Image (tube, rainbow, N blue to C red):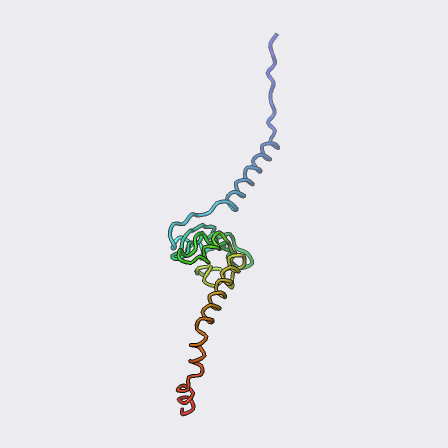
Length: 162
């Protein structure tokens, strides 16, 4: 007796479902997980101008990690993390590892931390706190000199003569 060969039917529906799942995983990976890793400022600036996903680590006195995330509501969303504060400033060392999210105008190339009005997050709040503390110390140390400059009789006389 001869054995009959079984003919397997190809289940096109299963193949189509598997193909769709693979494509969804690929697009998810590509859209949410892949960054261009920039080594120089010009690479980062080019990606910032187009608001293309990119990652860059740089800075002079403080080292920041910049991640261009996406376009949202007509803005380019950039995540900024302070990796290393100023070496001679203990206050800036305390805020290392903090982040802020900046929403920059599309097509504009600028350092996200240069105008923290576009930003929100713990790093922004800590920067503002440091700035206010430094300003308070400066005013307290120079209050006498500021008063003398304001009340300088020579300035008052010269202004009245003009």
